[in-house]
Length: 302
Image 1: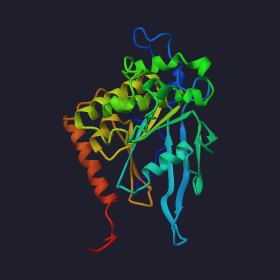
Image 2 (image 1 turned 120 degrees about the vertical axis):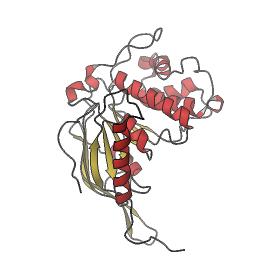
Image 3 (image 1 turned 135 degrees about the vertical axis):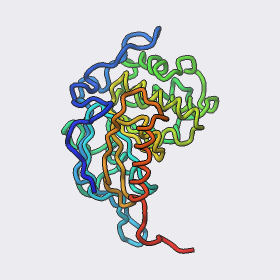
Image 4 (image 1 turned 90 degrees about the vertical axis):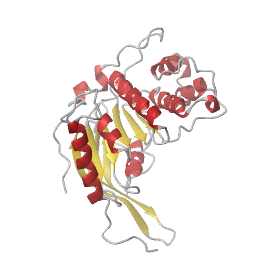
């Protein structure tokens, strides 16, 4: 089993905290007002360290069901990491540990050297379902985070800027049921980003979209990542998506989930999906996944 390397990322993303969110956020779209503050301004760089993290859940019979086992992983500030592996291998559980929504049964998780002990605005989470509030228009949905943090008076001008950032500048007064799936996910991204997180956690946010919308949203996520320099960790079951987006791909074993191997993606962006190197890497990952996901004995019989 290949162990996680402590070396800097080999491709795509920034190799050190100096290249992370503190490096600035880029210019806003025309007419969007003053520049949006850099991600998590003054709060850190967005580096994640996971040391021996395990997680078990209680079973109704009184036993414990292991979801993750001794996961070790380092994510550099501003890096784009994807987690891929068989269903049930604990990918989403690992995201929830980083988000602070779950506590590890054993092991430790750190953000910029500080222990992760609960949720925080410096970590944003986007789900496969946008989970927009149906009684609020899109402006209200995006504004929810800053209102919850009691920063409305100081930061209300950011709402329009983040709607522009995700291409929804004209849709602030529209309600969620009027939006397409891709537009709803854009709103969900804006709602997570308006808190200017250091780390954006993406739990299969494109899984429910059609193929063309999905590819368009992949490019939008890369554009936002490049502009804001946010560390991104994404769960996906799509190998092509992982290669297209990632600096490194973390392949996990069947549950309880462990890190099987970490694969750098050595292609400059923008990436073409049909070049021989892309297809060779795709074949390599599929081969690893077949090994990682194989059960020695059937889990059930028919």
